[in-house]
Length: 384
Image (cartoon, rainbow, N blue to C red; front, side, top):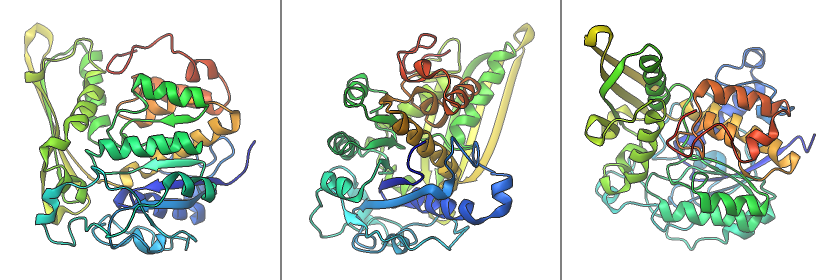
């Protein structure tokens, strides 16, 4: 097995980064969680434990984070996620200025500073140079929704620096054949796109959709409405930034259907911003269908979750699977862990099938199926 330490860099020191680092510290010290690792696939995954993950570099564009120690930056405004473990290590990492590009939406200037981003008046650093000098093995992309150019910048930086890329937001990199081939050619692993939370809106909607399909119910129409109070929801008030997000969430649900619904019969996407909710996310799902005898069936579900911690364990599992790929010299899209942890993976598998594939990968089995050209699945938006 390789080096016990997993050296990561983070692009976007927001709520998700805050929850991730709290979680790494908590799971490294809580004996009960070592015995029962709630929220993780395994406490020991292929020889790697949560405490093996070390942050060696971080990038942001907010004035309250750039130039600050990482431990201070993750708790700085406008971050508002729940503080469930404050004893985060004092990493010897100073948050550095990344390129702004399209990572900031101008409408956010119209909101109070403690709710929105405040751009730092700094020159961007040489990201490739920082990645190389820090010894980072993996970069996690936590940029705001709609950061298409900025995400491609960091993806290219990973290619140039020889660093694995985990794309936790909805810009299509791992699921874009051209980008996927570039990572494959360089022998660099990539996981993406758009993180799927532990029990979030998308995976709940997928499970319900599969239930309807498996029980022979014809789905006629469905919607998923989400609202929350973090900067992600504020950012998404600019509807022009939502094209990739809406597509990602919709195709994740459609992938569980034998016959996709027409656009007018399926509506999935962020809906509104309610400041006092902070990092709490509320999701409403409605499904209408026909059962036996064409008798109507209607289902409504409300889900309330703390948004950022909901994806923390998922990313810890993704990081450790990518480290295994690095140890094994495997590059290109990691199909199994992408399908299990992401809304828009290169290949859509059912969640149960993806879990089996990940377990096989961890055990060192079926690597050809995981890393090579899949023979039992269709491209993005398809089904197994």
